[in-house]
Length: 445
Image 1 (tube, one colour):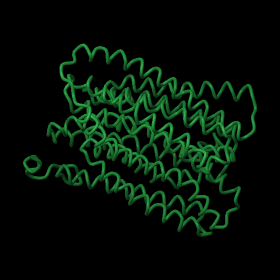
Image 2 (spheres, helix red, strand yellow):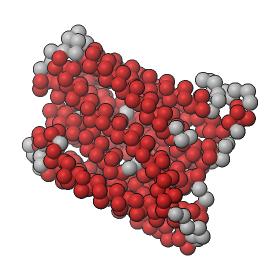
Image 3 (cartoon, rainbow, N blue to C red):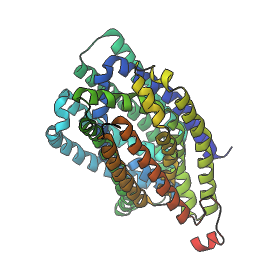
């Protein structure tokens, strides 16, 4: 079994258990917070993720790409400059967050201590990004897998103990849930960084070439900035989505409190169940970025196409059966969270959204590996704009309401997947059936 297959298998197994843990975590949250509390939790989470994405500068991607494309004797010097860049950027981000967070109105409806939790997340995520990027780049996926499992285990263990022993009001329960999230990230930082320090000492002993800080920063930021822009845009859309959905439902005649409850069922139940199989897609994304980067930098285009075929067949192999199971057993699956017939209908209507989303992850990894981050960004912009317009237009119709919201979501992800795939085919000079065109290799050279 080659390194690519081993990495996908290892991360998939670890991610499967992680998703199982996540499933139980969401069940605990749903039962403790209730429909309204779950809606509050899911509404604030995208905003927190947005702020964390900005603070991380997507260093795992840029470091992994640099490591995969470079000789080992360059790694120690690059990592040293990456650490200095992280210290500078994290210091600025933390100061800006301290000043800006009190001015963000979305936090006004939540416990005031949540702002402090977000600030604590910034350095935690930033410094763990260095270690995560290095292990991705050298394709040592075991440590990535362990860190992902560790995060979910800490969350489940703490939430189970706290909510079994104590009972809180909604705002305090949401605060405690986010405290546990931050604690799990701190534990992951300690684990990853301890492993990283051990490996870095070995690299420093064999260090022979010293790179200029300016060159390293330029190369890292050439990937980090557009990738961060992509993630920021995606996070902004996720942060806006709850308010767009609520506004559309209000315009469609749904009562104010009911909009929060319906969004809680959509995001906290239907999307939680539907994205459960995506752990394989995330494993593919993590392994594909360094693998594609390495092969593409060496002009091994046949290997890039081979990796793409493997990713497509793996995605078909788990995606089609997964959406079939979700469609057929929607009612018993959603009843694990709430006894709500609406949630099961949402899950059934979302099957195209989940299936095509499974393909988006490996396709986006290929685009990043081939240096086409800007293309991926433009695709996301167009797909999101069209999706949001259709979500509001259809959702504000009284005869559609939440059904219209879901139709708009389905339309957006189908468009995004199509644009990603066609761009990859054009770049690799292959047909849509993943067959080489005549003289493809010669044209690339």
